[in-house]
Amino acid sequence: MAFSLGLGYLFISLYKGNATDAYAVLFGQIFGITTGAVQITVLTSVVVLALLAAIYRPLLFASLDEEVAEARGIRVGAVGLGFMMLLALAVTEAVQVSGVLLIFALLVAPGAIAGRVFSRPAAALALSAGLAVLITWASLALAFYTPYPVSFYVTSLAFAAYLGVRAAGPGAGIWRRLATSPGPRRDTASDPRPAATVRP
Image 1 (cartoon, one colour):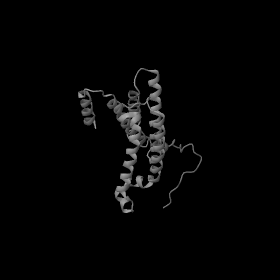
Image 2 (image 1 turned 135 degrees about the horizontal axis):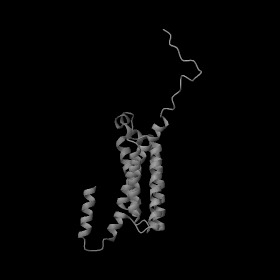
Image 3 (image 1 turned 180 degrees about the horizontal axis):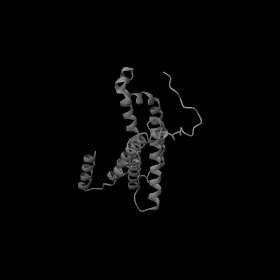
Image 4 (image 1 turned 90 degrees about the horizontal axis):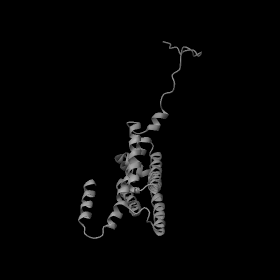
C-alpha cells in the first residue's frame, strides 16, 4: 500500500492538469459534503449495519476457527465474500468525505486499540466504532480552532492513542487482566477463623 501511495503521488506530480479531484480522493472533503451525500451515507450505514448484524455469528465463528466453522456447515467463503462486499460498500461511501488515507487510519487504528483493551469481540467492536467517531469529532474541533488540516489530527490522534494503549500493556485484554488480578492477601496470623487441617 505504501508503494502504491508513492506511485500515486508521483503520477499526480507528473500530471499537468488540475489535480484537485485526486487530492480530494486521497484526503477527502470533510467540510464539503452535501445534504444528499449525508442522506446516502446514513442509508448505506443502516443497510451495512443490519446485514453485518445478520452475519455476525457465522462471521465471528469463521474468523476465530475457519476449519471448525466449515466442518459445522458454515459457508466460510460466502461469509467472507459477503463481509468484503459490506466493507467495500462502507468504504465507498465514506471515502467521499474522509479520503483514502483517513479511511485507512480509521479502519486500522481504532480496531488495533480495541483489540488490545478488550478480549471479547463485541466489546472490541463497540469500542472501535466509538473511538473512530470520537477521533473524528475531536479532529474536527481541533481543526476548527487551529490552522492545521483535519487529516493531520485524525491520523495523529489515532496513532497517539494506539501508542498509549500499547505502552499500557504488552498484549490484549487489559481490562480483563485488571478484573482478574489477585486481591489483598489474608493475614492468617490475625484471622480468627481456624486453619484448614489435612487428614490422612
